[in-house]
Length: 270
Image (tube, rainbow, N blue to C red):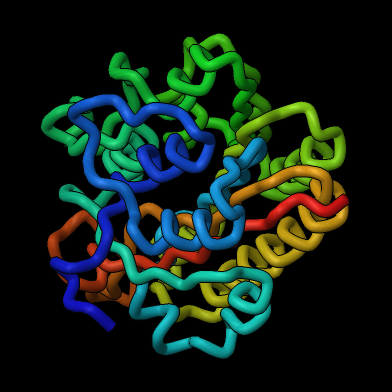
């Protein structure tokens, strides 16, 4: 695998998705993800996508993927591309998701610590809204994605549990009303903080995330057959174990900074 400094940054998600939709990438955004852009071009033959689903499981580190590769078999089987990615500092959730969805580094988008203000810079959601497209966020209450992207002319479905989030996400896919669906699951991160990255409860939560992603992708294949679409498994940061067996993140350690993303691109079927 390439060295961490050669890996695409999570900031590449926003510009790469804009490119996939055939929209102009504003000046000042961080670079796109070449491997994903090449996959989209090769799969679609010059066409653009009209649907995107981004699944955001919190804190899934590259080292977890490398150590527990067998857990990712089904998720990789429904994906076309596995990409080691690098996060940003500080490697905490609101900073990272602000970076991912704005295409800007923390010093530019303004969230530089663990806080959850509403972002005032343009984000992927804003660019799509101005292009006449419909994005939607499905998340758990109080989490970063449910707070920092508020006050846009778009729909938000915020629930108390991951189970409700996932049920709604599948419902929205089947309804086929949105151009971008963003889905957040924080269950691995939550259990990891309490039981450590490799605790049995944490790994069970990871299994749930991977199984749900695979089920999402299979549903996309059934329901979105008439669309060109792109989808991704896109965690924000990694994690490491600390004294007492707990889990943490926020540092520039490789375990916190290196994550794994999975992507796929589908060409419409007649």
